[in-house]
Length: 431
Image (cartoon, rainbow, N blue to C red; front, side, top):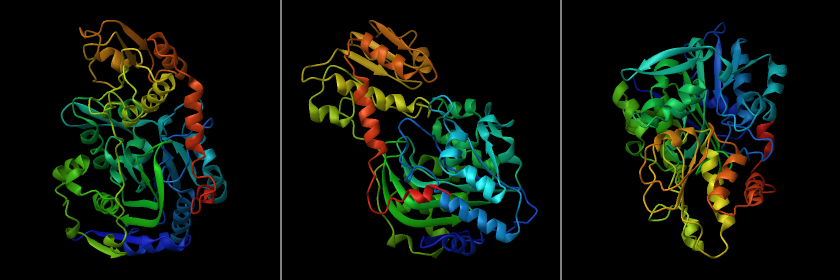
């Protein structure tokens, strides 16, 4: 049987979402008595420098539309679950629920909110001895609806349905997915085997380039992509933002294991034509040819310091420190070569020879370089992730006159970059 993908223009709530569900036969097999789990993408929350929500979070308006559609179908046992990355103390999943209007949805419709980070879990073995611990509510629901956003990602090129399921994992398993042995994309591609989404809806009201968190650029697309087949939905989403299936490793891993086709021609498209909506979006940031820092280092003439490009082993919790350390290094630059220092993060980078000092940011990279003979003098910032203060202290100890206010200024700019721009409507993220 040919799987169907519905592509619908968003014009009004809740009718547009309802149309996508009808075209994809999205509620096939659903019973009014079923326990339903909705898994949006609420990746992280920040009250100090609010993340501009466009293309980062599943729009609250569409989640409300889905609840309305389910209620109209007769469903009342509805749960919304997520396991947001906690960037700061008390800024976890429930901070995201509160800040994005989900507490209002809870009161208005009687839905239940669940923080997967606090859930009991069930362990599943994949690839020999490797295990993934998944929130029981996600595994045990009768009808799981996966609700990602249309966006690119700096480690995996795209972040759609398959990657959105990573939020169902226990924190230890999220970190495990970034292990250097089996690799990030191979690891998380298995989650769908155990959660088994009944319906995947990709929220394309906004599409995010160079996601995620504070730093991407969002474009208004007004699209909804829906399919009962998670790979079919992801293939359509990826093609719309400019990525062929054979360029996405986690697609290939999932396809090989399940026997599902990577060819869009093998799926039935209903609604809008994909070719009418293709808008290629970049996923990666430019880096210097000698891998000593982001492209702006070369443009400004920054030399001395080296910050090799982050790799797939950098966990979500530590990911902000990669950007932070780059901005801090720029803040120390006054036109003269900076201290001869290399700054590393993640789980597998190895210090290169020729640097006076090596800064290791986080417990994992400290462990990975404990016997590295290339290190002349080591400066460490312990933690998982290390604190902002400890990162600053480590860089100063290495001879870099960094200014944290420069980083704060950059973050404030990112928070406010859509203010006053037409088409970027905060009401999509309220209930």
